[in-house]
Amino acid sequence: MPWIVPVFAAVVLGLNAGSVHANDPAAASILRANHAELLGELTSNQFGKPLAMRSKESSEGVAGDIYAVMDHPFATTAAALSRPGNWCEILILHINTKYCRPAAGGSILNVSVGKKTEQALDQAYAVAFSYRVAAQSETYLQVRLEAEKGPMGTRDYRIAFEAIPMDDGRTFIHLAYAYGVGAMGQLAMQAYLGTAGSDKVGFTIAPATRGRSPQHIGGMRGVVERNTMRYYLAVESFLGAMATPPQAQLEKRLQDWFAGTERYARQLHEMERGEYLAMKRREHQRQQQAAPGMAALR
Image (cartoon, rainbow, N blue to C red; front, side, top):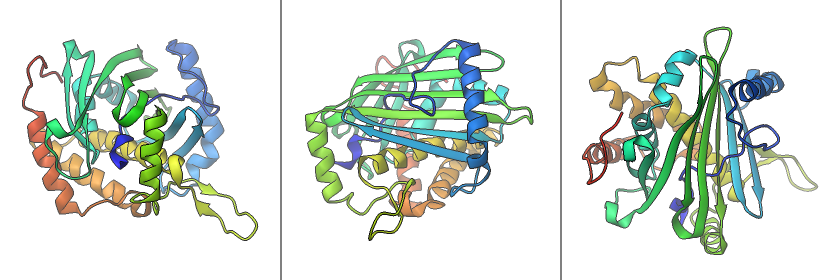
């Protein structure tokens, strides 16, 4: 089933899939080094914006990384993305996220994921993510979400977002996403890739081989690349709407996220604009209704 994978997942930071370090100076230095190494790719790429993508598949799971320059000051970015409720506003933009509410003082995000169409919450899969700001200073931010279990035999769901200020007033960010797949998850994914997902591709272009021209990758790496991009676009849309009057922010986020996915329609198109907007307006309204034991945090 295709909806078992879009949840945020196990994190792989660094160009060589290194581990996450919460020590501010060291982690900020690593991210600055990543920016220097990627400078050429950030300047000229297939995305039409300063963005670089990496993905990896192993026997234990898949991971995706996006590095990008965002046209927002670091202070604004860090203040917004260090609030748990704002992450729910980000997560709900994804077509498979049905619900998200902070609980336990903001240390837990209760998320429901499901199909690409409207769905009752009792038919979706509930995932509880631990949430924490692992590091925050005037020059570095790191946020982590983690969940041990996901739907259909998937596990070790985590996300890491880190950011540093740039000299020109913009922000360099790294969004890392991955998850582990057990035996049940592998069977479900194989079934999806052999049916509904058989013609879907990612963003990385595999080099030409004998008798075959360069092609976009598919399979599990294609899946993780598509969802890494969807969540990056959600962060971008959330930040881009912050200057809009509060009553108009949701609509701008929804419109911008859909427009962002349509720029990469080969990979990301799933439904028409009107269908997406109607579904998400209703899901967002449902998200605002506090469930028992959930605090309405922002």
